[in-house]
Image (cartoon, rainbow over all chains, first blue to last red; front, side, top):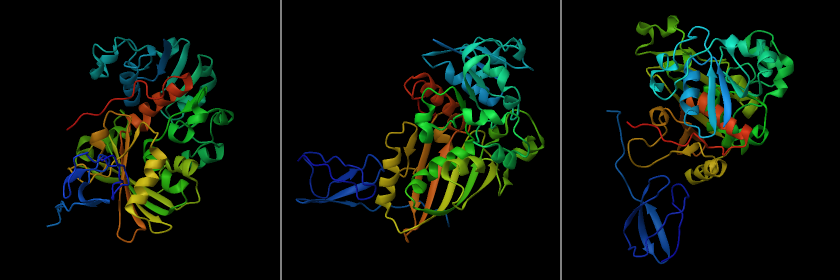
Length: 57
Length: 341
């Protein structure tokens, strides 16, 4: 696989490993978002959910 | 080697200049002056420079000619004697506010007195490379920048240039070193320690530099608050955008503007503790970190930025300018990270 899709959060290019699999998690080097490969053909990335910091309690 | 002198080297900005210049491969500091510290070793005032700088302060009257002269004097002093200093060096960088503004009228409005050398204002180039790079190349006379003005200018520049900014309300938090090394009532430990003291809610003098860089027509308001911090400036700007934007579009806008800027970093992370800019991360460096969060309506953008007031907000930018003035690689002597934690 030789494609560089864009991060759905920050629009930076995300390098996809040649042996990537569906549901694999990747990290965007620019914004640090954890991304999930939803589909390989066609390639689709989505933001993986994460627990957020909340000091309002 | 280019020989540089520093007039007024005992203050915090002078000390930061010395620290940075001693690791600049194409510059040699020949003399550093201090009226009060003349005869003493530099490291007796700037202890971090022991075994790095072996110079002794000399009296200003003993200042000799050099290739480039830094003026790190209290505001007002550079302008009053600029003819004398210009006879000592073909190139000058003045870190005070004396030559930052482009008109004597603006100077009088913001500094409350007539400019002592108004004919010199147009000879100086405002020393922020991110907006004035081409004019700085080969320039002979360059001004420093205001630290608070710089964080505002860099944080909002992409929004203003793209016509997206409708208005901005900004809170700036600053460390105690912004006040210089002369004690005053506000710097007295019982007052300064633990402070969250807004010392200027409107009308800060650095607004003049923001008007100059971003234009005076936009409603940009900023208040400045002293907090428990020694070095650093932290900006948080509530920006109203002219139209709804997506997070990706904001990323693209800032990346497009600053992609080729070595000292402006985009920090809007999704993981880790430091997802947005924080002064401690840039302390001692020439970086300005800029990040953002976009509200769900797409028009309320919160921009956050951080820099070191003595670094990118003063001495770091000045050395970046030196590199441009002398034809050196712009990043020379400035590419190193800060300390962490």
